[in-house]
Image (cartoon, rainbow, N blue to C red; front, side):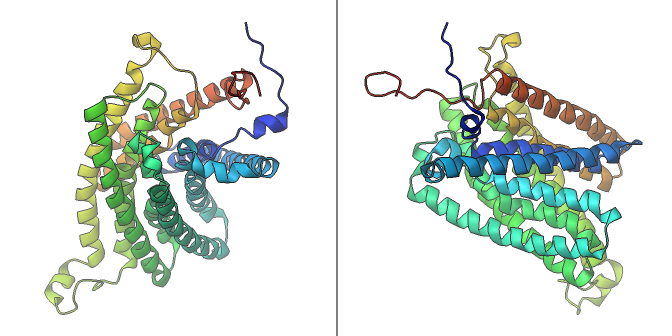
Length: 389
């Protein structure tokens, strides 16, 4: 039996990669989900706030660990963008920030003064600028390096577009407490980037389905990443409904609709038109999210030992089962609310419980793997002769 050589805490922290932000964004997503779930009970808002604060600590811990890694090994920053298994997950840092912004709006608005809305508005536009810059610069770099030839599983190529796409989700939440003159630009900006991220994701979906048809299912260790495909459909559905709801209150009655069409504007406003269209579009987007969720779920279950699969040790890709599916649950809640369907709302509450259970299960598995030195443990490197270097 091989005995692993000892490793210091600093050495273990240096094993942190960009993908570890997926733990933070998953935890922040759960906090937002608990705020959105339709059937609240006494104490649930407090639980949500505790999880939100815990997520802030997680974000700082991952950031601090990455700083230690990059300072200890100066070349590791450059190398992190040269490794396809890591560079595609760098945008998860921005996704973590997105959940922090959403959580601040969900849990801070009721107990803070007007200063919070001003701060969130400024942070939103900074986030938009950075996410656009990352979408352009990071994707150009990936094209320039020919990174796709070294990362055969195409679904992870959705991630560089995700931060920009989440701008729509943030806008749908922030705009409700903003004055109309500020809310309208936020909604238009959110719609612009939501559309950009979603349309770019369609190109990746084409490659993803081509891959599955040609090569079959990926290795069992990569199958949890198939849940990433649930995200764009889900977040676009909930963002469209959320932004349209705000448009009903924030848009001028003649906004976009020509003032010459006085008969139309006298009956229905631009915001109401937007809400009807967004709700109908969200339904078929939800259907596509459900399809991809089922494909991913069956694929992951088929690799479980209990069902005759080979099984797989705990790894970071399992956190892909949390954040995209959280968006799926919130999209279900949004559809249930606009359709005024109690059946859908109760279904979404059941989905919320299951989603929190998955988050807890993956979290416990991660803690166990770290304690058993299966994660965050330096692997021995070998020279050309096969000896430890």
